[in-house]
Image 1 (cartoon, rainbow, N blue to C red):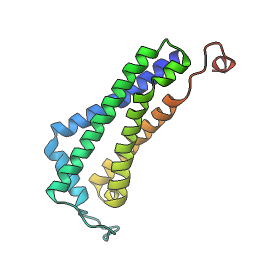
Image 2 (spheres, rainbow, N blue to C red):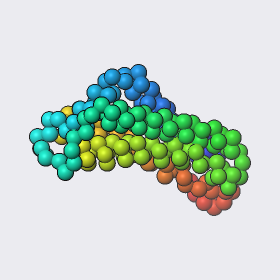
Image 3 (cartoon, rainbow, N blue to C red):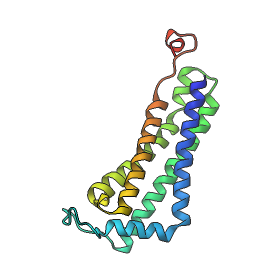
Image 4 (cartoon, one colour):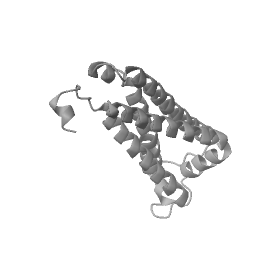
Length: 172
């Protein structure tokens, strides 16, 4: 059963990470706006100065992008927190019941992957080439770490528990 507690703790970490970053963005809203505006403007791109797509630094686009990031981070955090609660309630139940209780935990970790891989790496890194600037590179590296950690937690949490007393459970 200790593996179940480890899964809950790791999902709680995904929840806290997501909620902390979302809240930091809200508390530092103007700085967050400036960071998104800087990346989406394609400013200071010396390595690959041309882009296949246009710079998108219009305030409406920047605010919409920032809102999407913050809402994604809050969604990941709240889904993961609900997942921890569901796992806690199922911690002493059957393998099947515990597996069924993982839905929100997996949705939370998966949403975190989408935010930090999908939004930051795919959109920010590939489309807006944020790796070309120091500020963008730092954000991209952090996003890679958060996406990777969330993905590992997602995979580990999704692993089926072995029934107590099974040969598989004694092998660990």
